[in-house]
Length: 311
Image (cartoon, rainbow, N blue to C red; front, side):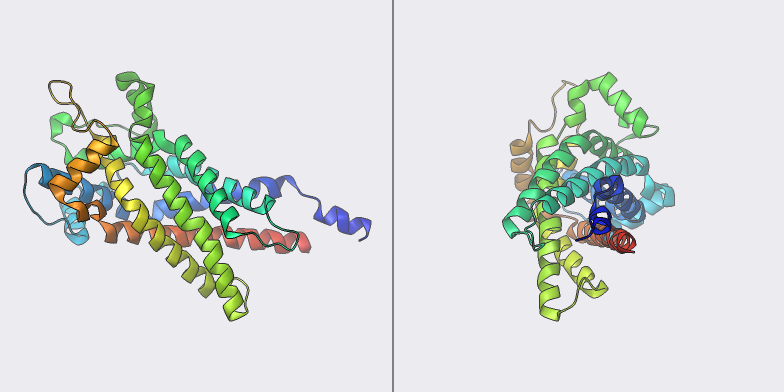
């Protein structure tokens, strides 16, 4: 290989930071578009919890809850906490997608292949680190989305994500920023395992089967399959996470749940085991398009950068 060829393949600063930048921006864009669905999902989980505590049954369907949100707070109600969601994605998606791509690329064989085990390992590590870093913004987002469901005198009324974070620290201490961190951590890791590794695996198998390379239809099928796996396995932990992050102490200073196990047990007793997946339609309707938008944008930018560097 000549000297110009060597210089052409030399890694640039952009090649190092590209997975992180594109991951964060694509995740933030996808969350902005799909945030109303996420808000509806949180309200469904809160309503299911309230009905369970009261020993009642009620309508917790996606369309019923969306209609209630619009009736009570208008269109703006669907975007309560949007800034915290964007802040979360700029941390979470930047870290999880950037770390995954960097780790996976570093473990590829000379012929460009990588084993399924290494993909899942990269996804696990990336999900773990990203979830820990993003948990404070996740707490703020969940509380802001659930706040309108509380009686007026119990609402926190955070002005924005920065006000939420500062008040949480001031009123409850730094530890409150990681409230519900264990189910959030499990959820984040499961989502990463369900999205990133399966997406690459499904895409590679479809490429081999159709004898093509990353066509739009292949990418859409792979991301839809990955989104379903991630939604199904992570929703129970998302449900528990929502309840732990939004809970407030009663007049005696006691919280409704002592931890993830207690929350899981009470949810099953009051609402039924199947209610761990309450709001699955809204969760999948948000997760699958989010996965598609994020990964398609990432692949587009990656392919564009690769073709640009060749030229």
